[in-house]
Length: 232
Image (cartoon, rainbow, N blue to C red):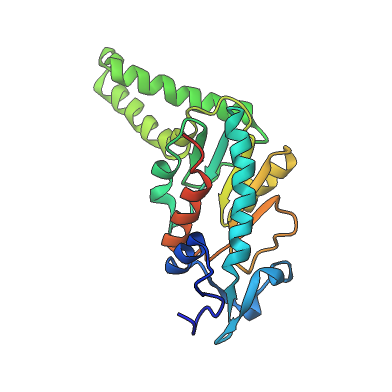
């Protein structure tokens, strides 16, 4: 344990211990390090940066305080988690009435052209309702099949947004570098961004960056669940 993370000792918090066990402390190679992450790195081992999990815990605590404030006001958050390591877990992690989610490609305009996105979401809702009521039986088999195919297509991108009726109060983004379009839209619309990032990311313009190993499924799952733990 000490070989990879010298700061580990009996004084560590439970959160730090759990993040360590999940491999959250492994950053990218030092050559990929973004200067803005310097203060969140404990040291380097075999040319790879080791993330200071005590600093990460501080970042998580600040982000949780913000989310708690949003949830208390019945605000809404979008969990942007299309990264391969976490996408299949997104629906369960976001299982709260105040959280919407995107676990496939972010559709450009989700925030900046919200009216158009709502039209597509409403169309999906209507088609799903009609399907459940057996309304498609009024049509030919070919037409009914066309409706079902459209439901499948729309669900892929919009199912996690069914309850999003207004601009969200914040985005929780897994890998801000890969989700740069979502981050840019949020910033353009004044929506705060909580972002789980690795050591290769510019965190200087993120509202609430959280530096962790974003290649570890266990680490991403742990931190995401921790962030949403106050949403009942």
